Amino acid sequence: MTMSAPVVEIKNLAKSYRRGDQIVPVLTNITFDIAQGDYVALMGPSGSGKSTLLNLIAGIDKPDSGELRVGGIDITALDEAALAAWRSRHVGFIFQFYNLMPVLTAFENVELPLLLTDLPSRERAEHVTAALSMVGLADRMEHFPSELSGGQQQRVAIARAIITDPTILVADEPTGDLDRASAEDILAMLDQLNREMGKTIIMVTHDPHSAEKAHRVQHLDKGELRIQD
Image (cartoon, rainbow, N blue to C red; front, side, top):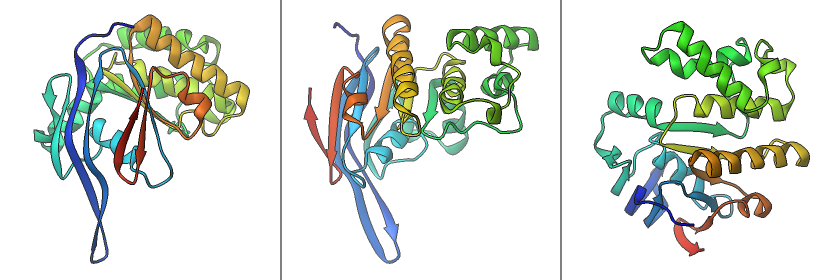
């Protein structure tokens, strides 16, 4: 598959955390690019740094050193307010445990990111209805998360992730809490978003079957990258 120029550019990225009096390195000298329209799986044993790397790419955390550009923007140079604004526009999040607001309906959960925009309510409603229809939940818009299955909740989370047409989708173990049938549905949906809508997807997973759906698999081991295409 032919893809365009890199949308994510990572060079010599490093990250460590303090544990008591110790500095514990988590990522060391990470360098690779992700092209627009790519679908990358990050794999590795627990503690290898894959979720930390995902959080850095998504602007949830900041590296200690190195370069990290997303969509041409050096996100390491943004202050917290600018970074929050950047995330709301450019990153769609899909989590293992959905992270839906239990007191909000499916419609209201998906609408949340749009409340940070200047779209009028009627246009917000049109966008939300289209997103929920895209994930097959047009008939569940007024249901609360507790009234939905795990697979349906993850579909709501996907609709919420794509509602602002973000630059990248980041998925942290998106099938980890699902049965196999529901997991297959979610993987098929991610594949559709990538193939038909050209969405750039970066997914952390422990599951080799899920990783097979990606275009590339990047292996992390003890904070270092082992590239396997």
